[in-house]
Length: 155
Image 1 (tube, rainbow, N blue to C red):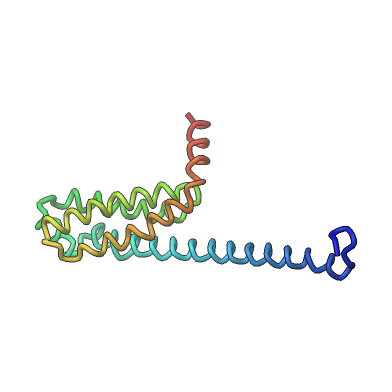
Image 2: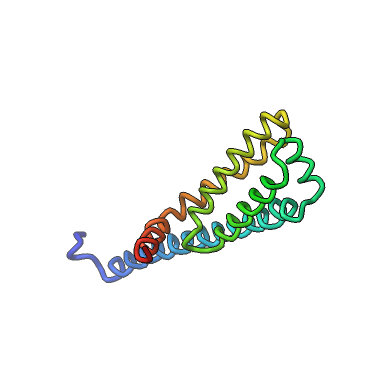
């Protein structure tokens, strides 16, 4: 049977398959966006609470670590503020990719410090955090054009 002489039953079944595939792709895309957003919220919570808060409130363990590095409290507060800014940026749609990239760069620095000053103690943590941050930066890279457009309009 040719396409032009196809029975009504077979002609009706094709659009259903195409629609089912499209709905499946749409559902997958929606689940992926939800999972990515949940990952961003979890990482933002980690940076906002577990990582920056001890530095910003001068927790004794953070103070000891920065003294051991030789950077003092100024660097501790600065890094805590950068981590908090990155956490907030992960939650702002226009800043998501930039924040993830900046936090990744901060984690590269943390890895170097862990390897050189602390002899590799907890060096895996920054490396592990770079992976989801890179995923967020890549997945949200489309927002960078919009950010540049907004910045140019204000300049």
